[in-house]
Image (cartoon, rainbow, N blue to C red):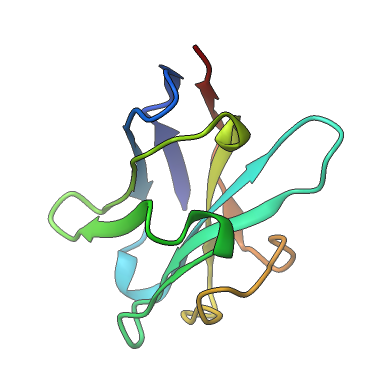
Length: 128
């Protein structure tokens, strides 16, 4: 199973970006796809999760109301739409697949331990 994240870039505060996580070698029906982010010197943090078992979409408290996770089964791709971006959203964003196809409730914290597969990161920089 391979995951490829893309869509990062430089955006001004208040702007938007859409990240993509293309999954190959497996269908989305068997894995919870998670987005994480990490800033150098800080711990990795879970941002969002899509559960195929019950359709749950979960978000970290810091991004609720601004980020939206979705999936396109035909393209085997999970997206993370980010709006109203803030400088504190600046980080390398990673997608990962968990073979336990469930997500924690929104507002939870999770750090990625136990993820089965990881993609390479994509840099998001929010700056004026």
